[in-house]
Image (cartoon, rainbow, N blue to C red; front, top):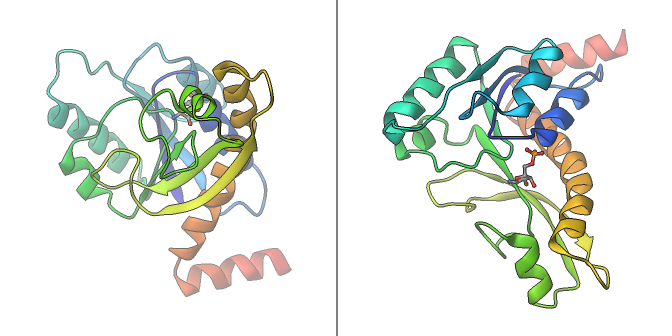
Length: 202
Ligand code: GRF
C-alpha cells in the first residue's frame, strides 16, 4: 500500500515508519513526505532516503486552499493511506472527508485522555501512573476517532515533560509502524493478500 506522511518538523515518527517499511514483509511503502514548512528537518531526511518530498508554507493561505494543494500532491503520488506524524495543523473538513477511513494520526497520550497539546505535562500534573501514545483514525474532531492501538509508558519519579516525551517517543516509533501495517493489511483485497502469502512462501 502506498502511504503519504504529513509532518511539520523533526519527523522522527516519519523516520520510524520509513525504516520499518524496509522490512521485506512490510505491507506499506512511503511514497511521499509532505510538510507545511519547507524547512522541516524531516524533509531533508526523507529526501536523503530517496523518498519524494513536498514542502510548502501554509502562511497566508486559507486552510481549505492549502489542504487542496496537499491533497493534489498525495493523489499525484498515488497515495492510498495518509499518516499524520507530528503534523501540527488542523485539517479542513474537506480534506478529512476525502481521506476518511484512510488517514491515521499518532498522539502522545492514552486517548481519550489529554487531547491537544502539553499532554505530558498534563499527565504528570494529574499524578497519572502512566502516560503513553495512541494511534487513531482521523475524524473531524481533533485527536478523536477510533483508537487502533495504544502503548502505556510508566511515569517515573522526577519525570519532566521532556524526559517523559523522550521515553514516549520510543513507544510511538514502535507502535505507529505496527498499527499502520495492520491497518493497511486489513484494507487489502483477498487477491493482494494471496499474492503476499505466495511471495513469502517462495
Ligand atoms: C510526536 O510526539 C507526536 O506524537 C506528536 O508530535 C511529535 C512529533 O515528533 N504529535 P516527530 O516529528 O515525529 O519527531
